[in-house]
Length: 230
Image (cartoon, rainbow, N blue to C red; front, side, top):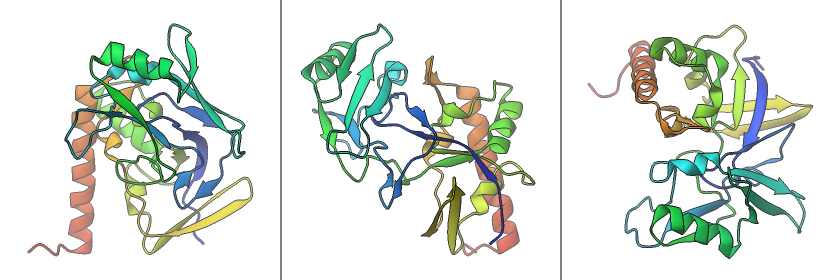
């Protein structure tokens, strides 16, 4: 097995679009990391194919801290702490009412054991990619703008090399645990729509830079592999 990098950090986001928590280790299942994005608030009046309430509609959500207590047990509970210090259980009426007051529209809480993911069960980004986007967009290198589960250092790799992983499977090892998966780990679109967990709205220059670099990287790889579109 070829070594491609080292995992620097692991994180989960118990409630979709809210601030996540860093963890020393996490159980990994077919549905992603334990308690990652298992809860989401949904716009009750939305008829969209993407009805979830996210930081796109309510940037303040990124400043609401989430945490899991007694994870992995029948008594597991997710708590939410607002910037003002208000602290509630995720399923409480107080959370829903607070969101509705700020958002101005009715919402309801969705609990999905499979997770409310945009694209992939597990998202990752490399320190090299974060630094490359920061340099091109002239912004601070902050990996948590991209809300990854795994932050990795490629050691001998370059920015966007992680796009190459996954054929025909990929494996990861942390603290003695070893897992292997089939298929390609997709980069969620959060990588092209970075949000700052403190300020909320996406940095437009960073969005533009990330999107350009992703397109450039995919185009270069298509030239090497050969395109099937012509």
